[in-house]
Length: 76
Image 1 (tube, rainbow, N blue to C red):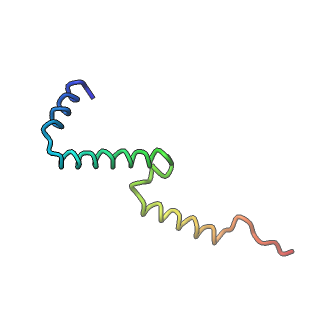
Image 2: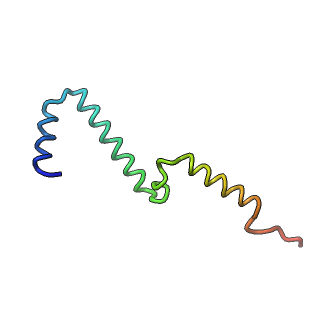
Image 3: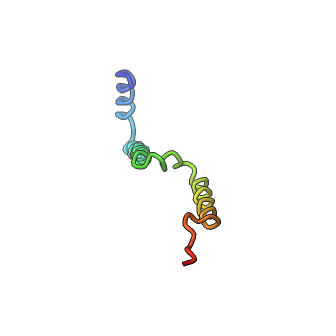
């Protein structure tokens, strides 16, 4: 962000109502929280916007595991 952009932001903040500042703070906190969550687990973070797809992948993996177990019971 340039110095000019920062000055405009500071001017805008000076004219905002307390309610608008609270809304802006909530927006910034939400954005930071999403970034921190994605940063904790980069693999799951890649799919954070696709929870249904992750569910389908996990379901397919479990189904494949049932059909083709990694270890077969011994006849012994």
